[in-house]
Image (cartoon, rainbow, N blue to C red; front, side, top):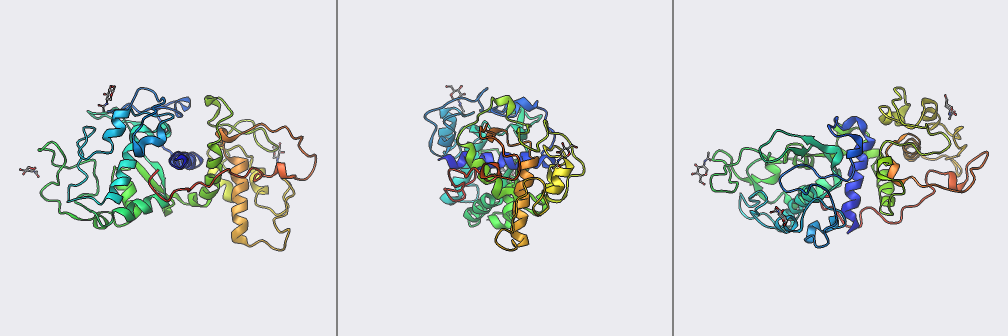
Length: 351
Ligand SMILES: *[C@@H]1O[C@H](CO)[C@@H](O)[C@H](O)[C@H]1NC(C)=O
Ligand SMILES: *[C@@H]1O[C@H](CO)[C@@H](O)[C@H](O)[C@H]1NC(C)=O
Ligand SMILES: *[C@@H]1O[C@H](CO)[C@@H](O)[C@H](O)[C@H]1NC(C)=O
């Protein structure tokens, strides 16, 4: 079941890496990890909930939802929000599964801190905005739902609630999902008024290029964090070229530029990261003949992530092997630690 957690961490990390994409938060940085939003059913603080129900159970070690909330999340027109998934006839079970998962994530996850925003609403003080979802997850949500029916593309607003649960307003006709949500991104982004944001669309530019690597790193996270919570965010590791603290670097080169708002690398490091047998580690990508440029791009991206990211805190570990004076050893390589598991051990259910 680690996969839900893993994907969520992946999302968190992608967003963190994409500093530019994350709007300013009203919370202090130290409040970003392990928090519950101030909303209708959330606990004040996250904590263990051994008996969380079915699709919510991945959060049982540390959850913002109580057991009764997790049970309700699996019901039709539950007392949580009296929301009727079947507003245009029966929703397909495969589709409904995604909405239940979405509800569990929203109610239970203590990892949405970076995307919590204050709102002026009667029934909640905070919401999430722009939680990044992997393209693959939006895709499977959309594919499993495209043959179900709905009458609206924004499910937050505009319902007729006169009978105590949401019904389609008179002017809104029922059509297949793919009428109201022509693409997976439209579904993820629009349905809850931008609570989610599909990562991997053109809008997010290069994000997709680093996603697989982040995925690997995220899998390592399951092993556990070595640093106290407050040191997990916005830190640079103690390694050969890393700055002591992250900070802006306006001129970061090429593929390292996504970190320019807040980086652990200097400009010179970012330039070297793009060179063959660079001064960084004298590493020869072409050790068996010319490496394809498309392939090399990933290694450059990997180097940029390793050198520049201030968001690797949860996965930083002390090492005791003496650093070699010249050249690189296996321990010295950014790719030295293989991940213990694959990220996607279960196919695409939403987070
Ligand atoms: C679930 O139970 C707790 C404690 O028993 C209660 O405070 C909370 O309001 C309940 N949640 C819902 C959604 O009713
Ligand atoms: C809302 O639904 C009720 C009954 O379900 C209906 O009588 C009423 O006309 C609807 N109003 C709108 C604005 O759709
Ligand atoms: C980049 O410059 C900094 C100081 O300006 C220096 O400490 C560091 O060693 C340089 N890095 C590389 C890769 O040359």
